[in-house]
Length: 363
Image (cartoon, rainbow, N blue to C red):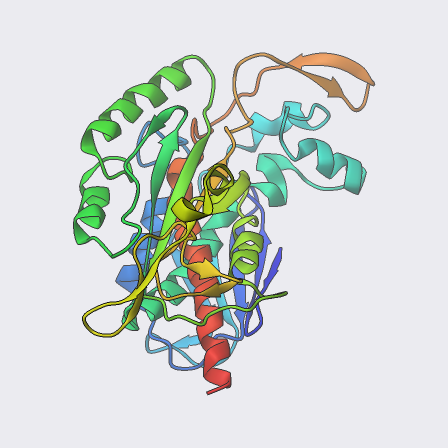
């Protein structure tokens, strides 16, 4: 999988049930500090096997850096980070070779590659490949934080249960403290408890559930982005859609704006006491004409339910050309949104970091 930006690109390799997965980062500048503790914390937020609320597959997700980093700094060469797969159970997928899981890329992979692609564990479409994304994004996210730019994501909803929204105007340290203290990445502790009970209920019914993830980029400078090919909304969208399971995105109030009058939707502009340009509201999500306006950049993505469920469903058999029933066995997340939160932060960080590098080229 190749994910290209203007100043660097990622080549993500491996598969869920191969020996290893990893990423080659080409184009990161020399001299970026690699904070191993920071990277480890980001990787731990995503890694499986930590609780009953996620898949029981237990991987350490320790990144082995094979090149591009010397004395905890990037040296300007390609960065190669590798993660070993140590807890595979490929036998769980032996019955799925000819029977695609409903709403899984099993079907489209077969149709496109004529059955020649190894789809064990989801193959290249597996959420396992988000681990290298987090590694690359954690380097960018730390570089942004060193410049005072903060990126925060949380579960906005699971099923019909919703958390409080992020502060749309300023960074709120209390909200970040809530994410760290709750068992789920949500602001409201009561919501966290309700969601835990709800996810247990869904799992016990051999089912899964969808979710939304809200993200805010605080203190990014105005003027990032362009009005055409490299619009802020466009770059964030194309990058976030590289995450398996993402099915929708909206910025600021998004689709709700279609129901509002201009007098309510418009973000009125003013100078604050420091003569900085601000808006009284942030319905536009900090982006106008594809360019950041200095307010927090906010967006929400929709994650579909995990398609791999143990409940009986109807599918087909490619080999026999019959309609058949399927019950998926194995270890799967009842809600993929929980572990996707740091992945969204990582992918967003890569977009913002690329914009900053582009700005530096023209100063």
